[in-house]
Image (cartoon, rainbow over all chains, first blue to last red; front, side, top):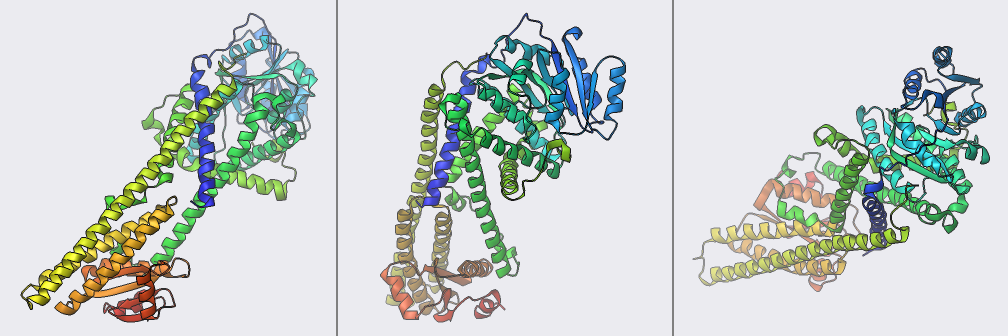
Length: 420
Length: 220
């Protein structure tokens, strides 16, 4: 066995180990995953909706908050117009006139600065953040507030789904978001969440102020704030029952910009909080999760490039061979001989089948925790597209991020540059 | 706070045990399949060897009875032998490409195969002479380490094999094999360039493209 085969087998084993780890946690805790703590406390909630040129979705976002199944006296809605140049402010004014929302208008400064501006006038004990392209289900507040009875809880995240799944990329993201729901819940069981997503996360205002609010120097303020919360030894919880929907990019260019921003943010926040890594003081997050994420990313890149290299090599050989027979391939066509083809099966084929079974298992449970029906006939294409393309897409995004981070890192600033 | 029922160490331990069992089982099944493939190739080599011995005996009988045994039968036999060795070669080729674990075991098989293949070639050459059969035999010398165009050459040879069926019999010899009969053949034909083809006893050095080989075989 050569060294490359040994490396590939080792990485495959590590990937399998991590997958088993999460599956076992998930299955063992299956009966408590949906348990949101109930409370008799009446928390006042300030909803912050930062908006930059969101005229297409802002109404739906505001309406989804106003429809919350929660006493109207116990929450306020603040839209922070971050220097929009479209009709966002005009549309919000209609709500303001009816006394339904408050508007804070400011010069464009990025999402974090908009949230911090909202925070200064927010009256609520709890802060609910909702991106202006996202929509909350009406029971969200009820599911989230119970966690705050524990004074150590600083934030609670909700389950995030994509609002539409048209086209190849949205179908893939639809499955990916379901998988993230499963992962986030499993991670929250060990207080190891390191992202509080923009769509639908609730915070304790006192803690936000204590830790200095949202960072304006990071690309991913929702990740930085989570790291910061963990750094101050507070807890971050997750509710499977609180569901928010968000718009997902339709085209590869927008998706690439979004992912490069996310992954660059992850790298930068990881560097900022590098003392978390391999540090037992930060519990499971520092001792296992972050290091294993690094390893998983390396494994993903290595294995995908290895597979790509072999596929390209084989493709070029085939082209060269066909060219050698002047592309007269008819004499080469013959019925496949099953017994002969069986000689192509090897250890990697068996491990590949193993990973396929595990992936299907994970997709099945991801759908279950997301309250989605498996419906193979309807969603078959989404599952297949996800299984085929996901690792290649992730490799593409990660490679682009690393190139960007190494050579180009300029001033990519979230929505300031028009990205999601 | 919704906390896990058990500590992380418990899950790490169970995950390690479970993943180790599953992964080892996967590797075990893969190795078992490799063993099955080896056993199948080994058995096919024995079958081919027996068929060659049969053919040699039949050839001896042909000589002994002075032509009383039908040449048609021997030619038919040679077609079967050619088909048998060709299928075996194809399986070994796929096996070689997919085999990444037991390289030594595979090499032993390949050496056995090469010896039988050369014996097959000699027998078929004898039948050809005795019966004045009109099939072509090609000894194809390749190298996995010193040859840029061997992959293309093999493809062109396959092309004509598929086109001409039993009218052309190809014997692919890996010149890197460290066995004396291969060294002897390489020495006898004076081969120092790869690929090289010996078509009906005539040496053609270097890559023979589709046109040149077609002319040699009388197709174009």
